[in-house]
Image (cartoon, rainbow, N blue to C red; front, side, top):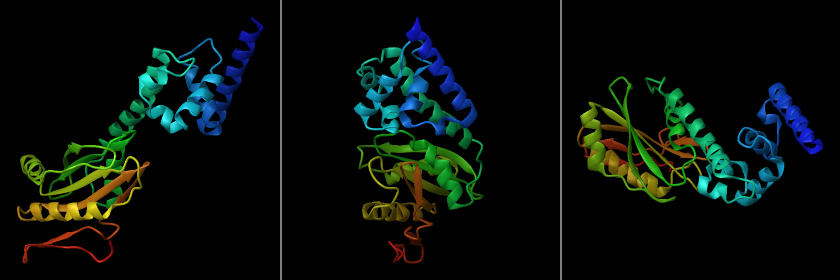
Length: 242
């Protein structure tokens, strides 16, 4: 009974601290300990939190782990594993719902904020097309492909078909670097150039390509490395700053 009271008082003190100062006032192991209060009501969750961090290497990695991986940690059961795993999914859902309120993408900053939620917690590379009308209104956001952690292919024909079917006049591409930096690689720029030309022939403007990694994003247009289609010559121009 005495040990149970100690745990109860500890939980009360931690809850009060969170209420007053927020989760950001706690170190990573205490945040996990606090979150596990809701899934493991009558057990000291501090050792479990430390074991989770030791097993996966960090707070973010814990939330990105699968339920099966989490359940292998001593003290974690199927229910608590599903609970922790669901937190990242809830965060992604929240951000996706917030982005639905955005109707137009008039600046690179707006476009970057619009696409970042698409890649929350992903461990493999994915690419999306945001199809716009002639007033930069969002008509549709469609996944074009997915692959390994460092590669994904895009079909120019599939992309053009999606834009035309949606009645769009321009498109923004966005893909992630799960294990890298939010910067376009030379291969990204070359691939983008090929798509710019394929779409330009059809009168579709590929206005930007955004790279997302670690919660940050880079716009090729803003970085001045976005290939540009010249309809008079039927060729693609690559800015010198690459």
